[in-house]
Length: 154
Image (cartoon, rainbow, N blue to C red; front, side):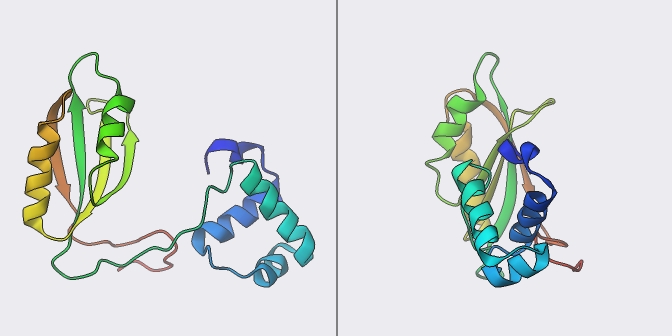
């Protein structure tokens, strides 16, 4: 949990854990799991949303075909280039799922899910053409052993 979640109490943290594992959990099931009434649960959810702890609800989509290429791009920026500047450029790239500034020898970690390995190669070339990007390293995902919300390893 990040953001304002540090100030959440134990009930809020339980709500966040349950919602993170299944954002489609009904209010009734959520209320039962945390031991509060439906109205108290709704009130807590609304506060967590209003406070910016819950940013939204989404579906985890399975890869569409066996030919999809799920990978991580690791970028090293030129000296003096700000990560946020490059991240704003990356936000316009199709198939981008997440983008993170990281500590260490590399600067940005970007997750993509392309329709084909050929598009991964093209995207790598496109990333190298962005002003401020010095190097791009590709980490292809071979098998997703455990994804958020799953209870068993594949």
